[in-house]
Length: 518
Image (cartoon, one colour):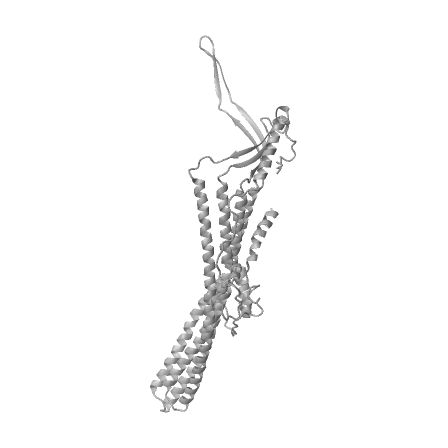
């Protein structure tokens, strides 16, 4: 490989020292050194990266009997929350994408990682520096005294040494990457940037899932509040009915007290929901990057749609979980840093050149006699470090083993999460079927008991018991629906949402694009 060293623009090529050409043997040696450096630059210390193996299983155990969605692309491409068919949720998701501060922080960290790649890659190229200076310096005043033969001073004098120095030069240097230290560093930083890109995707997914969970809980709470308000109206009519029956001597005063107790207790439950809803609303505001005081979400009719989520195979999870991708990229970064540590055992070769003008007279500054230049290689090798490099290599190898274990643990945790949410959704589906039967029975019992009370066949205490049971079953059914919605969000997030590992290519492409624009 031949390197051309740039000089200061507008200056002639420097003449050989002493008016003679440099010896040809020196040029030949320099060419041999450059060729040798280019040959050795193809070497890179340290092991080449191979993705660690991990046993992900053949299929999810809890997916037995799981009905796959048709078509199978309803989750895995684009905005995954659209499977719920809620326009308000989609509107809030758009605000999270643009204003969430946790996502903004992760995005800034990703840009930092790209800049680090660019800075490390710059070490593969020569550096050129220029300088110019004009200085004036002097030494202290010296004095002299002249005397005659009689010792009488006949004259005194002093002088001061002052000199000017004008200099302008350009220097170029290049470190030959003989053992791949710089290339391994670029590989490590590129993998770290890709891990940062995956962390950014994970921040998006986490914020989206948190918003969806809070939103569904808030809507279920609105439905419970609507149920309590309707129940309060029924209890108010029951209280008036008991008061009228007591006025005509049909019922006892204890029934009025029981009706009032039931009414006020239900009102208290409705009031208790307000602060819970307020907390969820404030959490949604923070996720959307807005002050809670300036954000509100009006109650509306909620039509919940439980999507059919395609589960796929466990091996696909490795490509669809951004946290798994981030852990795997950290393994590659640690592997590359082993090569960086091993390259420190070997000598480093630096080729440097300088050219410029230096003179004590301004008029002679940019003239041929004031020129100077230098050109030559520099070789530096470690002789004794008391085991420092060996310790650094062991540290890099231990870090790699740690990252491999962290990667495998992340995979196992992800597999466990999917299994948990599959089991939770399956059990909750069965539970909702049973709960719906209990709710239907409670409604029918309430209807029959109310008719008996209005016909005077039973007292009001029997009605209160049935009404309390019916209300409890209504609220349990809504809570179960909310839990199923939350579990479905958790499952989609555990499957990676709409993210895929192919997105990691943007880290490498982004770093190259940034370098090209400089």
